[in-house]
Image (cartoon, rainbow over all chains, first blue to last red; front, top):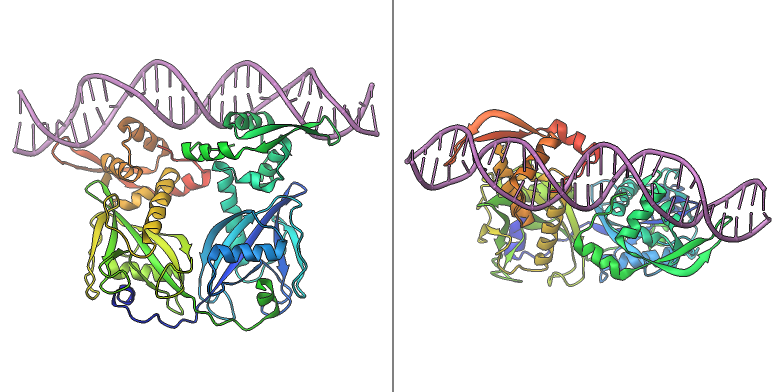
Length: 235
Length: 235
DNA sequence: CCAAAAGTGTTAGGAGTACACCCATGG
DNA sequence: CCATGGGTGTACTCCTAACACTTTTGG
């Protein structure tokens, strides 16, 4: 049947399937990984917290829909966004058959404004280890997103997406520690970064109750080189 | 709007979006990575080769749809199957808005029967480096699948899925070489495998024109240990 | 001068890589 | 006995991981 429908040109079958895009939006606050949740105002799962998301519009690409939702929720654009997984079990939404393409996004601390534009529902950041029960199968989606983020952290440079353009090495290390859930050795961490050569030292320093820290910015030029050579990034 | 539609309980919008599941089915033949393609009998892309796939049924899970298609095309069950990516750009299918959830599958050499059950269209294996032009955006899907397979090969044990239960170390090495596209050092390859302890030597040997080869089977017990410890698998 | 955070080197162990010859069988 | 593929060990390099004290600033 499947090949037949493609091969024989049967008209596209009518379908009760709806497509949504859901977002796992991460940030770092107080050295902890946080996720943006909204509180549902109506059934099903009234009062429960859920991942933000919405239906795919007819002439809209998947990533475009994710970016639109993201901007509606947080007011930010130009963030790291990556498709996570597509969830389509029958029965995962009591209102009908819904296939959800999940994305995750990384936004720099303090960038988000959490536009309270939308009606009734609350929206706030929750620590990933300490969030309330979630609606639908969103717990599963969130767990999967955290797992993906942890893996990506180890062989890419996504971690920088969670920091402002200028940052100290200690701040960067805190990001890694928050996501990986373990502490890292300061000297080994710094040596590895120096070796990778992907940080540009700035002339600025910043004080925070002790000796002022050298500030850095991420050097995009070296980023692509890193990817090409396939260097691994294991702390 | 997106949050609103979830939060306020608007009725599910009607949608022109259709969902299909497409399959990249890999096998190894003649020491080369092969992919199963079908030839389209009618427009659009009449005569072009394409990935097998079909529309998602209303009460069918995504993976179930992929397994059903797979069995229809090849007659095999119990194969490695993994969701690859979801492609949803408007305009990727001239017949209308189609969101495609792509899966890739690995089947052991000579397992597939290529059931010629379906009407008109041809179906055959093509070497991945040497396949004809593809319909729709299937070239992109195939490239992505190969990339994913290469990556997975390096830190998981998916490679074993392309071999029959009993195999020699040389056969296993050929699989790795075919997928990675480079030759590997025999001694290093064998030492690494011995170190991982995921192969069970059998009492059997097999002759193939030279000294008979020791046969092994994959030991599932050690597999889980490998994943838990997070050992990497880089040749 | 004290508290707080930044910054800095060495060593030992494990993994990766390169490399060449003998072994067992069939014809 | 020869052709064919199977099987084995060593040395070097590089990366990882463990580990403690000094420096610079603000109050």
